Image (tube, rainbow, N blue to C red; front, top):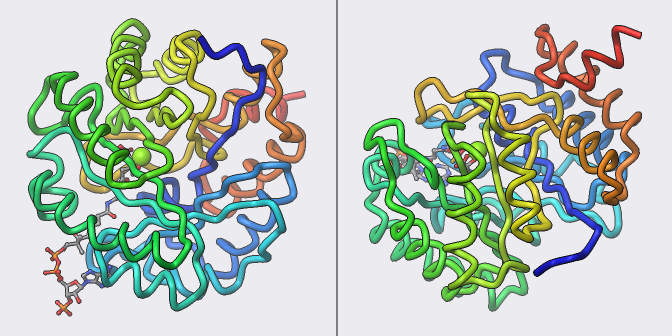
Length: 299
Ligand code: HMG
Ligand code: MG
């Protein structure tokens, strides 16, 4: 049982958040966002995505953004990579941590990266191998762990199988993604419990979208189960363009507020995070999805 009081947040707003926003932000705004976030105490900030710009035009400026951000010592800036071409692009700008991604559902994987689960893993194996040779850290995502927009129910055994394979291939951490935010606490906890029998809990993270308003409850259930790494997006932006109806990730501000309220530590300055979230929603000309930021601004 993990009794540590410290939780590491993986801030995914600049990638998962912005990949699905209608407003295309200029690279300079994305750079300013990431530089604000690195001043809040966050230690992992997913910066962008080297996927095909035809598939995700919002992040077509990945190279410019990655080059432009201030690299704060002690902060990691992973980038999403779908294949060898993405890896080459990421390395050209000096990325030292990548995230690869596949799913527990065949149907979703096909829509998202135009490959079966097996094909995607075959595609990633040489990328991971090269990353190891280059001293690049690799994180792995498993999507649709609690439901799929195309297939519906996703058997937990499929989540376990895919998570185990990514870990065996060399991913130092596996993020379990409820891509469409349909999970509820008991199911989330049972899924994590099952994966943790095959992959050490210290190598697992949870990644909840808040489509059905369950994300904080799911995170709490998973914290009780022992997870200590949580993905979230400042201001609760975004979603996956290839998961119809999926809303943004749980808002980082709300996660930090809950954790600090429980007496847990994150190393993050909540006021600075709230200011970053409010700034981002102004850039996007939309209301923040963070309840904490809304409450704070109402004072
Ligand atoms: P494809 O069409 O099968 O690929 O797409 P292809 O290899 O046949 O290439 C087609 C064209 O794309 C070619 O260009 C390639 O050069 C180019 P053309 O000859 O037509 O001019 N291309 C690239 N260009 C730049 N960078 C690259 C790259 N690769 C190919 N890396 C592919 C396959 C994987 C590329 C595509 O499906 C793709 O990019 N998908 C990404 C979709 C995506 O980003 N989804 C969101 C992220 S996942 C997510 O949000 C879930 C997560 O948050 C966890 C959760 O919530 O569950 C992680
Ligand atoms: Mg996501």
